Every structure is written in structure tokens, then in C-alpha cells.
Length: 214
Image (tube, rainbow, N blue to C red):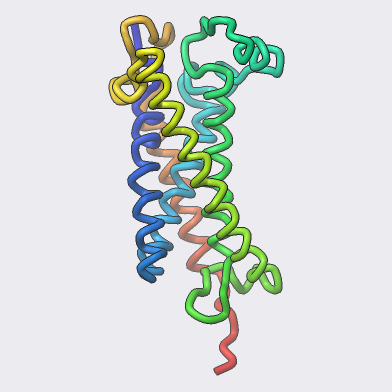
């Protein structure tokens, strides 16, 4: 009996709320250096989770928990879910949250407001840097909405259905929900994260700076 959610999945999952909260605070306070660094880390974390969904533990792979429209409709009609991991709605919500974090970090790399903040890849963004900065704000609003829905869903399952999802995600399994195959080594996940961090570092450090007109 092995954890349904392996260490890589759990570490990334619990890192997201801490990092996103710090990203919001640093942006609001104007600490743009800190804001950038935590944004880089979120990009690496989201990218690692997406790749882990392709090459990681069997229970962490997207093919093992993503369902088609018929399964979603059946679940919405009240039919019981008998799978091991996320229910059909929760599975796609997880993917949406990952993509929103990825978009948030990616647009932040190119964003510029021409006043206080200029991202490391703003020069490559060119005339799109302004629109990307605007989309960075729009995507943040959408991301907040999904986070709120995520919290409401957790509360619903805890209060109404009596399922302790927080405890389950912390421990990786429950008495009835576990994986039937062993997890892949967390060192592989660390290696993926390290490669992504190295590529991002090279991209940021080698990118040309935007010319100054002052």
C-alpha cells in the first residue's frame, strides 16, 4: 500500500499556497525583487508538476486521474465516484490551477508598466509587454477565483461529506484511498525541478536588457 499522492505532488501542493500568498504580499508592498524570485519558483514548481504528470508516479500522471465529459456528467448527476484520486471535477480543477499559475508566472516574465517594474524578458516582449502586464493582472483575478472555489470545495467535502482532504493530502493517503503501484523516486522530481530552474536562470540572465531612454 503506497501513498496516492507522492512526496513530489505533496511538496508542490503545499508550496503553492505559501508562495502565492507571498507573491501577492510582495507585489502589493512593492518588493518587486522578492516578487520576481517567488514568481520564478512558482514557474519551476508548476512546470515540475506538469512534467511529473507525464513521467512521475503512476497515480500522479494525468492519464490516471483525468476523465472525459461522460464521467464528469455522471458525477454531476450524483453517481458515486469510485476512482482512487481526484474526482472528475477536482482533476480538471487541478489542471486549471496549474495552468493559471504557469500563465501568471510566464506573463510576469515579459510584463512591464514602463514606470516601476520591468520584467527580465520585457525586451523580448516588445510592444506586447504592456498587454502582458494587463493580462498578468487579469489572470491573477481568475486565479484568485479558482483558489476560492478550491477552498470552498475542501470545506464542502470536509463538512458535508466528512472527507478530510487536507489530512489526506498531508499524509498522501487514507485508509481507503491509496496507490497500488510504488511511487517514483522523489530525486527524479528534484532533478526535473533543478533542470527547469537552471534553464530559467539562463533565460533570465542571458536576456538583453531593454534600452534606457533616460
